[in-house]
Image 1: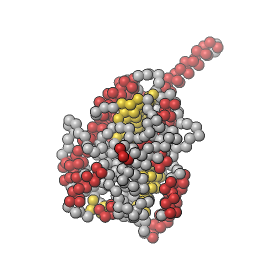
Image 2: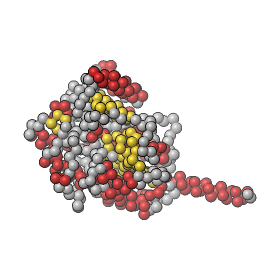
Image 3: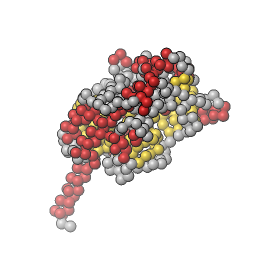
Length: 446
């Protein structure tokens, strides 16, 4: 082959390769307080979520996706850093008098993506601090998810040569539940999950919540339409998650399953298989490593607590993804209740470090008509759990999720499960040591 022809061919290949790399865009879509079963693709026949359903049809739906802390700011620090929140320093809410902020030393997702040549934008809810640690190149706001998606179009199309990272966060379906147009449900039609009381108040609040979930989904659907019309659908990684569980007592702020087991759907445009449902157990500490892996932007000599799950997106059954950990300390500053969790396929251990305290309530959850109805009627049960058990918890809670999926029978004091308890306690200690958790001292001093 003549040298000139070879050179021309090589340049063509390099340009093509560069163009392909430049087109590896990322959309991270985070909703606020959505439960794991509250979408069409997750089995709810009442709520209409065409956006998430479409994403699942063209991507991978996780059946075991978990936040690591069931509180907004703390969870978002994990999402954007790949570290548990006891290591980010974002122990609780950032806003107002709560004033929790992350450590300056963090290397966060938006900063690392920018360093790798990405245009970065944060749309909607932010709720972490300091800004210089979680800095984005552009900040976009909007009165609704759909309108905010429209405002993101100019950012998406601003530069065809430079890839983009769009972090899109709705305020839906957080309380107060926002509804719009046709998003009105009859309380008789809602599906009351087992951890909630089947009361008129709860059904009424769930009906409003359903409408807010649909409102959040419309933003995703509009963004998918924008990606398709702008020619970016086939080169954009899209990940959809919720920051923590539904905003009802028994879910949000707790590390029971309704508080931490959440929707997670991802679409890798370069993945051959689509419509996959995977059993891999992943957490939000895995989000940053996954995105950096996709973007070829993983920094050297920097350790994340999470790991990339790109390799399992085409696998229904997985090996090596059999357990996860969780670490929660605060919600509001008045809600000190540190919990640590090790969660296997079958067994789950919760260590309530401040078990001597009554379990604290987020102000909006306590004020909810669902909880107030229970108090007004002096009911002894809240869903399948007794009010007493909800408010006053044992030091250790050990659950066999295979036989007790609703976590109502604590096996920590059962002699037949003593070995399982001891084994999981050792796993928890090792996790805390590995992630430099300050609360590891509580094993020795309390």
